[in-house]
Length: 210
Image (tube, rainbow, N blue to C red; front, side, top):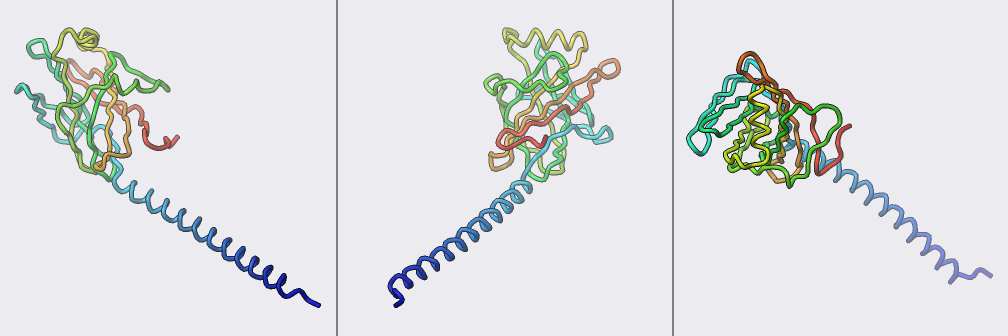
């Protein structure tokens, strides 16, 4: 004689197992779709900074102490005024989202190869917000006004000798995420000009593409 109680229990357990498997598969599929949607949304607001083109118009960049520099397309500008050092780079945002510049770091030499950026504690915070729209042009600016700054003499000497400089820029998207560091070379050009060249990009909040 069949044990209908046991059969009923097994049938119920089997149905529950099938339902659990279907639910699990549905949740996994929904999670994959959500991650794909999130990646697409983030890509839509992701910035990527590179130098402007050589034929782009110049930018006039002003500093808080009423000093101005003109920086040509694809170039950097360096000016000494009253012992201070004023610097700017003409930038283009090759990404889709707004780039919000945050901090910068400088080396009195040209860095190549796989050398990475320093700790963000070594970076200098910008004294004003600089936003560069996606697909548009803008600039970075920085200055040395304190001659007791440990890096002042090194940078001033490199500029005097017209040696290359390396500048790392830390920036994010307009939501404060997707932080990245882009490394720019500032290379002597002609008698007193400076070219801007991109070296490397690092993603801070996500995996690098390499």
